[in-house]
Amino acid sequence: MTLSGSLFRCRSETEPLKSTPQSLKLESPPKMDRMSQGSVKLSSGNPIVGKDILPQQEVQQGPDSPREDRPMGLNSGALPAGALSAAADSDSQIPPTEDPPGCDRVPAGMRGDPTHEIAEPLQSPILWHCPDGSFVKRIMVQGQGLDKPKGGSQCQVLVSGLPPGVGLPEGWTQLTMGSGPWRDSPWGEVLEKCLETMCSGEQAELLLPGGAEPPALITLASFTLGKDSWELSVREKEELASEERARGTELFRAGNPEAAARCYGRALRLLLTLPPPGPPDRTILHANLAACQLQLGLPTLAAQSCDRVLERDPRHVKALYRRGVARAAFGELDGAAADLRRVLEVEPGNRAAREELGRVVIRGREQDAGLARGLRKMFG
Image 1 (cartoon, helix red, strand yellow):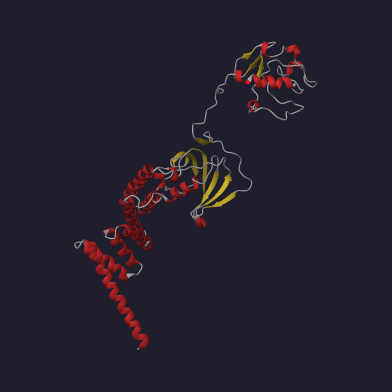
Image 2 (spheres, one colour; image 1 turned 135 degrees about the vertical axis):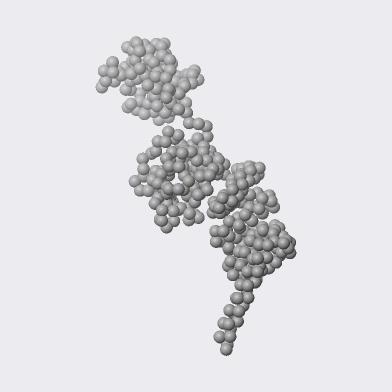
């Protein structure tokens, strides 16, 4: 039996084909409905008339199924060799089919399932530790693919179990990587880091170090493609850094030095990838970061930030003053006095520097007096 001009490209029920041309590999065969003798209708196309297939009486039936219960044109034996080559020749004549009704296309650049359908959970969750020690991720449902959110990616995320008052919405929400006030809180910063490690469809518990807070459940349903920092142009990096700087200044003035420091730090990470000497904004960002670190009780880090400023501008008044304050805080009184005197050389009327220098001098005298008393006791 032969099939002239066959449009049916299916595997035999009893003898699978060993090799099939690429054009014949379909995800699933089209559904066929009986119409009338000598015709078959595809569920998403037009009827195929009798000249395209054999009349109904010429189709052989399998031994286990009655004639009226089997689709037209299918049999239980293997396809003849001629039918396969005829099917390959007819591929170019088949018009492209449209998507069936109710089938939504995934937006261009989207990774994952925007319908929020999640796969089955793993029998044994996988623990992943962030290299900087900021969080631990317990993977409950493994994601698909290799792509992960980057800067500018719009992520469809389900967040639940966060402590109240962290500034992050519960339930399904859209978060943009690298943008938005949701990143200002400590939980927001950790959540962004966690999303950078997730694939589409992944579900994980987010745990902070020490286990002081209960884990939050994070589900990444889908995301659009973004860019790594090395993929950004110089102009794009400078624009993003400027936005982070403005946001940091706004947060610092609002009395939130911790969130401001995160903004300044992100801006610096963008600008540090530019070729030297880099834009002048780096100096301002280091100086602003030092101010945040002083308010957060981190004088050693503040002094290091001021060092970066003074390497580029040795007469930067704010950096000299802040390093003087930082040095005084961790007991380096001689260095603190030297920095404050240099401030007064540049700005003789700087009242804050003069007052701080007076305190440093008094502490130095008290320190010297205490050392003298100790020496007298030791050798007297």
